[in-house]
Length: 299
Ligand SMILES: [Zn+2]
Picture (cartoon, rainbow, N blue to C red):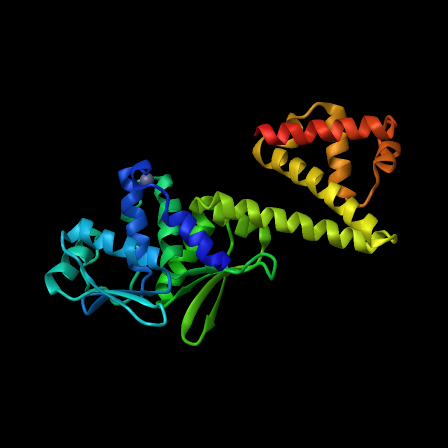
């Protein structure tokens, strides 16, 4: 399975009962609005993901009390469409659209609170998002059929979530995308894909260490592997502490070592010890790093 469908499965399986009612509605809104169409003439979605189709159906049923039309092609494409005129009308009305708008826009009245924006983005991602496996490249995108909608989406990221996506066009479709790995991490976390976000962070750490070590060190590959693996575990732990609690929460000598390790993944334990303001032995350094690893495990 692709990284993208892993993410979709992870966020589609967030228990609806754990969400506030306002957020449930915001998520449904994102899913419906950013599907293939959301207008009196047609309300539908086309997706490769069965879970997404099921969620779309559930949203339609919740609002209208009636099932939409569901088709699954042999190639695994799922189409859900609302055919009944009255049903379409009540769906549009539920989210404050009268169907007479010239260009489709996001109706901000559907976000009762800050919490709803994250739920909305999750719905939007389920409808039109993809994310490339971090092993290949850092790329997360939303492909949006309507130009005004894509601009509104950028505005939400920009104005409320402190994230700056880029926008481009591909075959008449607007692409709102992120290339920056930390922003992708933030978007994943925001949507509730904590597992995927952690995976991306780990791949990133591994790549960074690998690059650093390859650049700076020149010894047998068995040694490189061992050094990379050990540094990887340490840096992974330090980044986790940094993310969850901040390194300033650490006592002075641990913090100094943590920072030193982050900046120098290629250094051996003895080298780290010599680089400390108060030089320490190899075993003292090892002891402190183990301490950091244990702290991270408890987080
Ligand atoms: Zn909410």
